[in-house]
Image (cartoon, rainbow, N blue to C red):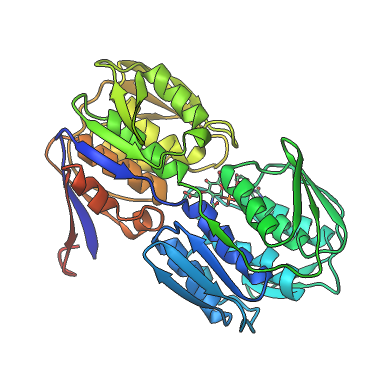
Length: 423
Ligand code: EPZ
């Protein structure tokens, strides 16, 4: 078993480059199924979830070459449409093969993704939207089996701007006959990015209002080249890191400022701002931080993925902060871990109360999901003495070279391998 061991309390200095966005790379890999040939994706993050999606693609007959951050995907010999449970059960984004397979092959078998620690995460919007486009979908031994004589474009309405449901419907609509309107669509930058990629592949994709996409399907699409957008959630994680110690001096490069409006406004309220220096941004903070109210919302509201990350910063604010999570029903599990470190956070139904400032004390804790794990890394870096973090594979799902990036900033963090009787 591998764990992180962190000795906290040190000021950090240096520069970090933000990697490509995991949540843009995952739909991009699924979208390669929509055309035959060789795709070139640049700035692809080398994270566990990307490798898992590539393993699924390989299982379906695709080939790939992944050197540095350039990924070549060859879909010429794709011949299978059954996504294997063993691989799909590792990552929820495997659900994105539904839209791509039924779009490209008019059939597909995708394991129904389980819930996860942050919530039930049903897929009813995915199923109802694809069914309206003409797919017959049934549940067979835990698999969603899709069949479609033809896919016909039409008006679709999403009751909630689900990110991956929007992405699934976009991919199927790109190869459906006629025009599809997706109303109530998610408008996360990663969704807009997928629209750009589909356009480069020859699909007609137009945003006709803030939350309505119009897609005119084509008979065939072509492979394309595209660069993955920077990861706004990794960026938000390092923005908070920069503010965690009053003597930190952290510069961030490849920062997608345009995708971070709400988190940056919140940081300003707390007492943290950015100073542009050449190509990079320096994170600067006031001596004393102020408490705030955070309510998570779909984009462009405050992102749920940064909710655990901001909670760690608010432990240093003088006063009471309240965070309400509106997207997922169980996204406060990390609070139990922080409270082991002395955070003293109070849990209500869908909110938490943070009474700062609090000095955290290093302890053994465990990551309960990707962003919870990242929050614990930040907590360990700001705590006195040593923190061990278990279940670090969850963190490696979405953060590329996190340990190396932190070590370049001078953080005392290392990966330890425990033998069985130690763990
Ligand atoms: C995407 O998940 C992201 N994952 C999540 O990031 C992110 O937290 C989430 O969007 C919200 O921004 C990827 O893009 C791979 P949703 P997704 O469908 O698409 C309900 C991370 O850490 N819902 O927008 O699964 C659902 O239960 C991950 O990188 C239905 O009810 O999220 C939830 O309450 C974590 N029925 C809400 O919508 C459905 O059919 C938002 O879910 C679909 C969703």
